[in-house]
Image (tube, rainbow, N blue to C red; front, side, top):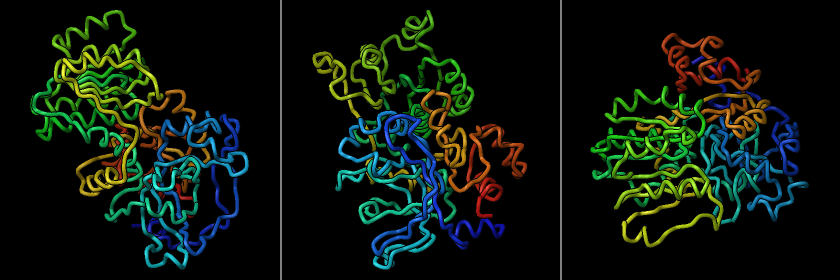
Length: 422
């Protein structure tokens, strides 16, 4: 490992006197500003951390758009205290307060369960989050840090544990089984839908759902559907699954639905937060079917026909996040090489471009997850394939990057080339 990259990973370099972070002072993207402030040293009970990677979530769009009107921020002085978004972060400890020196060491790595349930707070909301290069966490957040044990685990693949854990948690009560043959991911071409898609293929490959024969994914964007088909058709073939994508706006949509599942769908994952759309989809779920309500519906929305659910014996489950145990379970899979969360990586960006990247997510221009590498300089928003000829990747890594496949080896090259401290 080149000296500079080793210095980065072991925190053997001089820490800067200042830190940069994106601060939100009111609702609206015009009120999100990148500022440079004195880097805080940790107090006796605090740790100082370096943000290695922070994934962008659509929740960040909601926070920035709503500001004080966001349910989690209504009692928070956003104008005075500011909000630093970002909760999908992988971090490294760079300094430790003397009261917690027995618990933390410089170089320790963690991911964060953002929902601090015990304290009624959340990282990236009323606790400053990962849209920064350096920050400080106190005792409240420390209780929700999850250690990364495997030294070889990458920064991006561990940061992506958080959204993947939300997907995994949605199957905690009911999952695919031997009786399931036809599945529908409704509104599934976005980043979270693609995670559900990969997981659906994996349950067939693992033998958990041996009879799963057809997976339908619908979305209103032809561009996204084309991207998903190109990216995952090979995985579908390996799983022995007929993978179909449909756009509901096309004239033959209803006819195609009837052809794909003439007897109805066994498993419906609702990824479109539009109640009428999902209500119509539920009517196509067959007897003994399952409905996984994953999309971000508002409280009080939707009509549930309890009589139909009762007589058709449909199981309905909902999900709006993950628990710390879900994140630990997914992290173990990553560390053991059983789950490639990097399959969700679409683009990378430095801290300076974070605002542009969140706006790309807002405008549905990001075909999958965007990763903020806060420590990299001169890194504009760049889809993974476009990095192939701009960085000195080994030949085999370059070809994978060209295909849009991100990895820890590719990440090492990026950090070696772009680390601001090099």
